[in-house]
Every structure is written in C-alpha cells, then in structure tokens.
Length: 363
Image 1: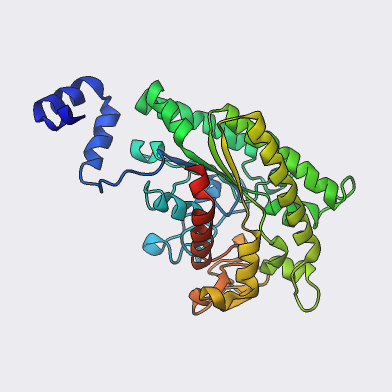
Image 2: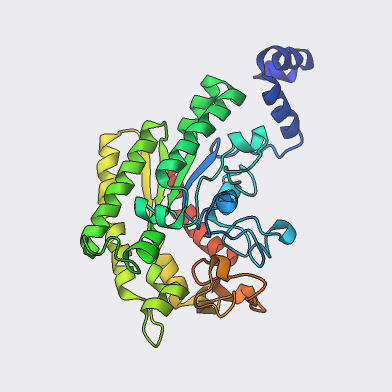
C-alpha cells in the first residue's frame, strides 16, 4: 500500500483499476475523516422503530412524513421517521463511523456512497406475522428481502462482484420488528386469537422470525442482531387501550413480548449451531426500556405515561398532525414522542445501551 503514496503510481491505480463510480466515491472521501468505519455497511429490516421513510411512497395510512414529525431532525423537516428526530438506525450508523443518518431505500435516489454504506428497508406497520403487514399495507419482511436482493444488484454494479461479496459478508444487519404483531394484530383483532392462545402465538412469531433470519443468512449475512420485542404493554397507547381506568401497563401484551423474547433466544442458539461462523445475537431491550418507563428521572426524563404529541394517549401516525394535535412545550422531558414511539432522547439512551452490550459481540 506504500506504493500508492507515490502520486504517479496512485494515478495509474485510479485510472486503470477503479470504476467511474468508485473514482467518484474516492474523490468525495478525500476530505473525509480518516477513521475507518467498523463495518462496510449497516443494513436494517423492521418496522416503524427503524423506518426512515420507506412508507412515504407506498399506499398505506401508516405514515409520518408530515409535521410535527421531524421537528428536531436536521433541517426541522419530516422525513417519514416516526419520531421528533433521529431514530435508532441513525444513531447506530453514526456510532459505526458510516454516516450520520441511515437512509430509506424505497423511493430514494441515493448516491453510490450512500448505497454501499447501507440502507434501511424497515416499514412502519410491518410484523413477523404476514397478517400484520397485510392489514397495515406495510412492506412485509418477505418484500423487504426482495428489496434487499435488488439492493445487492445495485451495490454489485457500483463496486464489482468481489468487493460486493466482502461488503455483504462483513456488514452489520439489524432486525427490529414484532411490536405491531402484539399491539395491532393479536390483541385488538380476532385474526389470530381464534386459533392461537398467547403461548402458541408467541411460538408462531418465533417460527416466522427463525425463517426470516435463516433466509438472511443464506443471502450472505454473517453478523446479525435481532432486537427483542420491548415492553409494548407500557407504551402510552396500550396503557390507554388495555391498562384499565388507571392506565397501568397492559399485562397480557407484556407477557406475549417476554414469551417471544425467551423463546426466540433459544431459537437463535439453534440457528447459530446450524450455521457455524455466523455471529447472531438477541439484543434484549425489554429490561432497559421498562426501567426507563418506570424510573424516567434516572435517565434525565420525567414523563412516560403519555407522549408529547396531542393528548399523548392515543395519537400516532396520521392522528399526530399539526392540524389537530398540539405538541408539548419541552420534548426533552418525555420518554415517548407520540403514543407509540420513543423520542430521539430516549432512542439515544437505548442505543447507547445496545451498542455497549451487544454490538461488540457482532463486530
């Protein structure tokens, strides 16, 4: 590599060995910080927790590309993130040294350097259960995998086959989904309750999760973090709908979440045995988020039983809008932005915890 410090040798290397797209990327990187990213790319699948705007251009009511969403994001404009600001995938990409924000893949005209350093395929309203995505008209996990296939072809066209193979095998993959299966499919509708009790539905979700992760491994992923289901019964909307007159945490929803987390942990160990050499980790956020909700002041927060948008008890997505919903005066006090999604400040606390505890096991 010392030869490349010679300007003449460097010129011939660039002219004869790099594609035009790679030359463009090299030029853009010339004035960038020299610290190398910890992985080539971050690739994310999931639901609204990780959706940076994939739902903007699809036919669904599960959207957030309007005010007051994005009020604290760069430029103060809504992007389709279900938050007042940045979401977990943004913080993780930044910590990995890749870029400040992880872009959506759908409907985005991304530059080569943005494509090869990772994207999110996550879609608000999606679930492990195909029925969850269907009811919400979200991008299902199978459809997210199809988008990933198309993405891989674009990356190969930019970098060439050999470098692309390295990118896909060395990148970090995050799967964050499952909350909507609990909150939007199982408890409020009869779609699954007629056939499955809580333990058997947890098993069904584990089966879907296992199938997805194994498909991802077969497509070249070797470093995969699966985020567990949070204490979904404690988010403001579920307290309103299932927590009784005092709006306590909805116990059945939390029971389903903990059952899934326990059983998927066992399944992940089985998959690791089946695919030796794969780094596969369950990132359990149930405990840390539950503690934030129960003891917000320990994390520099104050209010956890309601969100910042509107009454904070039911408003989410289209119900959280600048025409019918006011916004709290100090969002930094709130654990939740709307009745379902945490604030940027809460997400940062969660990601700091996840990054310290789980990311070293993957990279």
